[in-house]
Structures are given as structure tokens and as C-alpha cells.
Image (cartoon, rainbow, N blue to C red):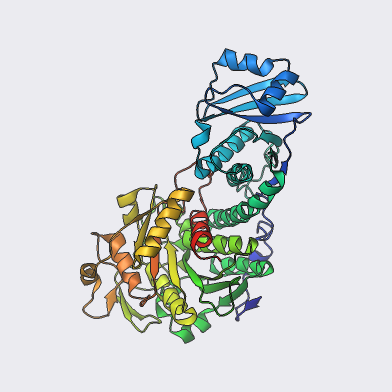
Length: 520
């Protein structure tokens, strides 16, 4: 369901054949689970623990191939060491390939390592240009039930195979890996367990799509339009226009957008899967579809990356997709402020003073410190309108956080020790790690201003902290966390489960947080 008035979007963008459907993503691979049985043909992946003899399907495959697999192991000196592989081409017995993956100490493998294993397997299969494969998951792996092991490996494979190729004029010659079957003692249970992971993978892929899109296609109106189909998943999607935001007094957000030919939008997505009347969880995303820096213009070098300055909003869209897909038993609000920061004759100037929805006035000393202005109004709107249990905002907010943490961790700032600890735990479980940074009244002094209530930048020192301190002025007493994802949402560290420039970072982290602590 879509509420709210909006002006007619660019008709050309609505007809754009490159627009991807948000309710059916091509990058979700056909994934099935079957009983442990040796396939008659095709590519077979075998998982071998360090120093272990061939057992189960591996032994059966070797016997059918006349001992060819065992001979290849001996010739190559393959021991099952972790992350090692052995490709046995045309081993016989009808198989095209037998691909051996070393597990190392299989009994100690953790869930995240199993997802990474699935991603590594998919990566190798892609390098072979395999279109389909069977993966034998009949060995004793980790301390989890067989169904969870198979589901985790399938999850990692699905996260890995994502691609963003629709702007390529030439299609790849080889077909992508699009069909895997996991052979497991508990095929029925694995299928049930995988349903959750599949929903999350779809959310991750959506977030990646949005970050990877060029800004001439994904401007603010188009971004908002792409949220409409999420209504088919059961989300209530409301789109707010500049006129509606002006009536609410959102001068901070609208000030950022006033230099662009593309109007601003605010999108609110609601998932009501919990008890009626129960206060929701709230996730807020910065959606700057392109950031030139405005009048305080950025250097030309690397400015093309600023198409990804909406990574926080992309994460919120992906998270809401995942929660709706898996029918999460919780009430959730996802809100994103979407603008483009451009330097035309109507653009905001350094030194301007704007009035936020909260009534607080803000001196805009640097128009490139724009994300916090957008978030200020969206945070205030959400805490005032929905009275949430907590708010978590995500934003590619500061380069300063990368100076402090690089790209391995997102910066975490919070007024709640409990929420911060839960986010930290979820980060280590999913590999989307966060590191808590300080907030303190002393930093407020740096952003106090002699004319307005607050200024939007405190200078070079403690830049990520003063940005978070600024945001804290718009949350009142609501438990809140701010995730500065400048180093993780775009051009982050590549891994076995992510090879994309747009990483989809945060969807898995926040889904884990919700599932572990807030669903009943």
C-alpha cells in the first residue's frame, strides 16, 4: 500500500528497461536440498576434513570413479587443509568434475565460517563456468545440526553469486552458476532453515543493487519509486513530497536538496508482524543519491564514488525486504531521507541557517556535511511519530571514521549500552563488525554556534564523533545507535560472500539483531 502525494516522476526513468524488479531478483540462485545420494552426472563438490579419509559420498564417488579421486589426492598432496581445493577433472563414473574443499578442523567450524565456505565454493564453481553443481554435506561439520550446516553453506553461495551486469552491452559467454543442490541427511529441515537465509540474501542483493546504480538513473524520485513494489511483500510504503515535508518543518533535509533538479523524498516503510499496538523498532537511512559536496564542492578525484552515498538508505530498504520476506514477528519502521546534493544557483550556501523539524536551528558551515542534516529531520520525525523502542541510523557519514577504523569495522555510537552490546555481538556473528566510539558532553561544545543552536561541523578533529554528537540532539531520550558505514557500505573489503562494490553491508547485521533479541 502506498500513501502520500507525489509529483510525476521522470517518465523516461519509469520506462527504463534497466530497472530491476524488487520482488524478484535474478541473482537469487535456484537452491534445493536432497537426500544423500551420489548424483549420476555433473559437478560434485566434496568436503574433506583435515587428515580425514574418504567417507560417505566421497568414498562412494571414488569407488564409482575407479579410485581416480584417491589417486588425485595422493598426487597433489591434498590433505584437507582449510581453504585448500583440489579439482579433479573428468574423474569418470559420469561426473564432469569432482571438486574437493578442505575444511581444516571440521568439528570447530563456526556458522560464519560455514557461510564463507559456501561463498568460496560458489566462487570456485563460477571460475569453472559451472552452471550447476551438487554439494555433498554429509560429513561431520561443526557442532550445528545437519540442516543448519547445509542452510549456511547455501546462504554463503547465494550471497557470493550476486552480479550487477545490466549496463553491459555484451552478455557474458558463459552462463552463470544458477543451480545448486545440497545433499544432506536432513533435506527437509535444511529447506526450512534456508528460507530465512534466502530472505536475507534477497535483502542484501537489493541493497547492493541500489548502491551500484549510477546516479543519473537512481535519483531521489526514482529511488522512492523503487520502494513501491515492496508493498506487495506486505510492507506499508508511504512516500512524502517536499510540500509535505515543508509543512512538517523539515528545513534541514530540504535545505540539502534545494540545489538539485531532482526533488527530495522521504520514504517510510512499515512492517507490522508483531502484536497490535506494540511499539516498533526503527531503522533510519541516509539516502544521498549523489553528493557533490554542494557549494563546498568535493575534489574531482574519486567523486564518482559518491553515487554510493545512499548506502545507509539501501541497507534499510534491504532489511525491510528481508523482514517482510521471512514474515518477522515484530513491528518495524524503516525510514529513509532521499536527496541529491548539487551546487546550482539555488543551492544552500556555507553560513546559511536552517530550521529543523525539531525547532532547533542549524548553521550550515560546510554544505558537504549534509548527511547529518537529512538524518536530523528523519530521526526527529520517527521518534515523534512512532515512539519506537529504539532507533538505529545508518549513514555513509564521514571520511573520519575510515581514518579511525579503516574498512573492517563500521563506527558505532550509542546512548544505550545494551543496544550497543547487542549490535557488537551481532556484528561478530555475521562478520559485519562494528566498533564503539565515544559520545560525551564535551564534544557538544565543539558544535555549539554563536548564531544558531548548533553548527553542522566541528572541524577536522574528532570529525566522526562530532557528527554523531550532532545527531544525538535529534533523538531525545529514545535508545539510539548511529552506524557510520562510510568504509563498509561501498567499496568495502571483498570476501568469500561479497565481491561487489556495493556490499549490502548491514542487512545481515540488523536482521540478526532483530531475530536474536526482538522477535517473540
